[in-house]
Image (cartoon, rainbow, N blue to C red; front, side, top):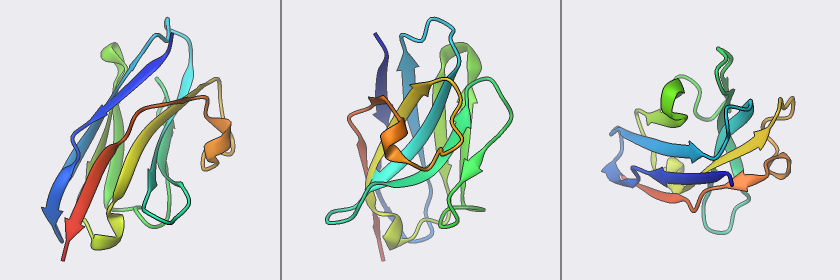
Length: 125
């Protein structure tokens, strides 16, 4: 059974950095497409970044491009989201998500089958 467990959230001041982790288990070596989403209170879930496991492509939303970096530790299927120069508008619950196979519309939450429980990021001004 596929499971996703996020960690690494916390509270930082504007301009600070955080690194989120997501352990992805139960894949049995099959190709998965992975993503980070976030959701602030009263707002829709928003795609942040995505990548196909084991491949070089990376996708980022315009709001985080140049500040966030998504990476993977291939042997352990562990994902990271390095977040630099954080802003108050980055405050949200951050979720790791995955789906078997490739995805063209990586930014759509409804294409992902598996979700983690989320980790809270709070950025104060």
